[in-house]
Length: 295
Image 1 (cartoon, rainbow, N blue to C red):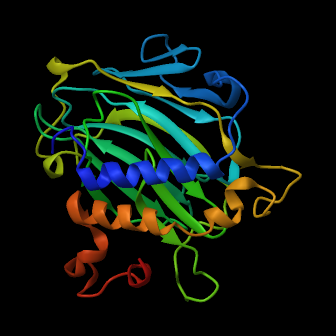
Image 2: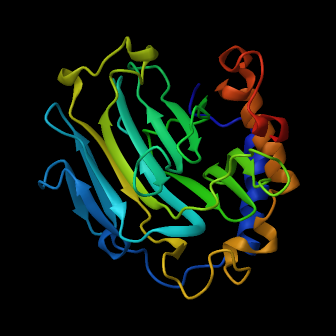
């Protein structure tokens, strides 16, 4: 995949931007500094994680990677992170932005953006996954319509009582409706609060070519940039219930994706997705998980 967007995607992006401009509240305050809503989780040695006010750099070498987390846990929200990924040979390098409940055990909920590095000249793979009550195995993988190492792009998670939608900039790339009230066994992360986390780590055992291509430390160190540390979310202990329609991300325009967003989502699946667990019947004994019937 090259860095040029297809014409259909540019047209849809314009429509989505106009829709978002008309419905999303505009922040009046300046861009938030990292330490307003986030804290370092590991790699706090002044090298592997460097804070520059409203931007953070994470560097991974053979001695360590790094990661950070939100100070609060959230029960709903529209979360985002602007990221610029490491470039060149990045095989085995995993760069992430995700939501995860606590404790991180067999009953956890989790929503993942995982960027899987590759050999120089081979596109980075974006893998998404959703865990509900400890059950994952819901991977979808795609190559993006731009080079995510060339500049910052926005990666977003809309999570409310009605749906879970993952966006790249303003294009939906994954949609999961909340049908738990009507479909037995339907997996939707509705009961646990979650942290926002980001990290870079060595995934040599699985991330590239099924683990056959490892991190080449002579090509490092590997550095990713993060921006966008404001949070639109219902923090744990909020006086307003996290499912309240008073919270803008729970409002009517966020309860379903629009026709334009649906069209963009279908085009992403058609042109850029190269693995979808819902199409892998052999993995599930010639069947598919229940949610795949409602995608």
